Length: 337
Image (tube, rainbow, N blue to C red; front, side, top):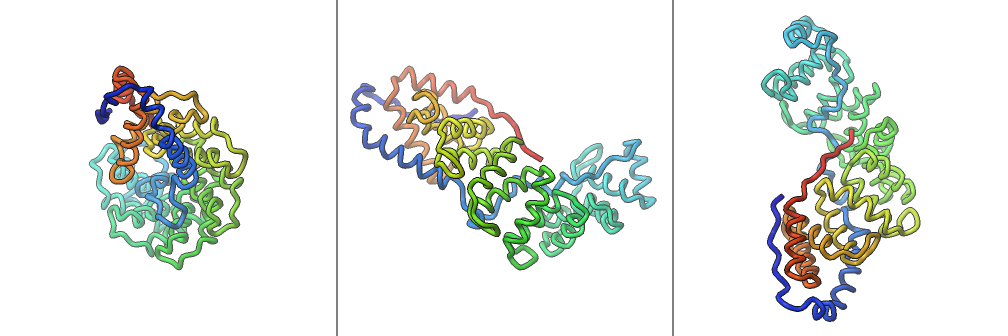
């Protein structure tokens, strides 16, 4: 893991403890601020759709019984929609063949036009992302609606995004919430996250922090780092229930372990302040260093300052230990369906 080399404090730690009182009050204020505004309100920034697979590859294009490429291709050429759908998925992912989005779209369209719901869902995502076909929200909406009506969760989720942000259709947060809920109730982590956003910020539904926390938790339990950060922020700020720094730290840690920069900064502040975890400046320095190395712009300036401020509490040997921990750190991988 690449990390930055922090400046040594160059002085006696006890001196800096005495002069950092104001800074530690500021740190506490920033903590409270970030727990409430650590993520943009739904609608302020369109989701990067990390919750959506590229091209919506969660569609259930199931392999034929034989799972042989030549036989699948032959069956697809003979017009079998399941084979066409699966062949498109093979090309989309580059499984047993060279990855080719255009060829994926060609075969998926053939199946979709025969009413194959998984193919319609995949085609919906291809038009949304512009993979293998020109990016076209109206076409995405058309195929999403067809697949969503047949119960395809990933299409229902994408349809919700299209309605929420007015892509290919008039903006309609209420209709977005309807489709998010349908997908969320099928266990789609991304939809659970988007529905939680709706409840947290009162967009398309009546604002309800408890419902937001409920849906964030469902997505967080599936390993979605963004949902873990939101849930940690709600515990840290007391939204949707009693303030609980221990729970907040627990969820920030889960997201931080995946490399989420916001969570890493929050965890650094919690170790710095002793909120929800034992006060530990070495751990605080490590997490601030990781956040600084992975961020940019104002976020990087803020996390660098945090790291250097924490460094004033440490001896040079402790700083070296914190830097070694940062160098040895490796992210864990987790992402919901």
